[in-house]
Length: 157
Image (spheres, rainbow, N blue to C red):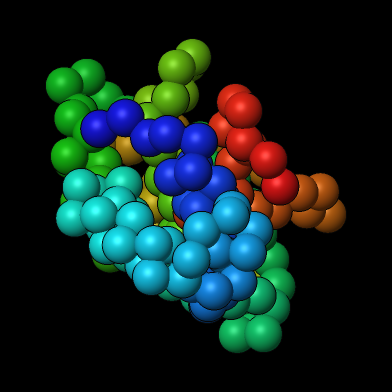
């Protein structure tokens, strides 16, 4: 699937605010509301848009401590093994395999330092985990949300 400039601008507008009306998006990109709806429907059908969501401030839910955990796994551990192990932890909000020494990096939200420590210990006790290394977030500097609002080459905002 290849996106043209209008598609990219529509996606950028939706990534900033998924509740934005088709008319509002149309005024941003120079299309009518029905034309924007047709493009959004096509982008959904083609898989460029995989869903719509809400971004919630974790602190509003009582999750005030954030950290990242590097996971170092034993030999022959597949990404699927890591995924299966981590999906059981509601505190894990994202996890990715990475280059470098670590096998995966996990983003965790917890209620407090003790809760973070408990999550770290539970992850470290997974059978595929040889060791972990963690860092705590002091101040988030930039957040674009789960879906992000990337600036594609040539996009205008």
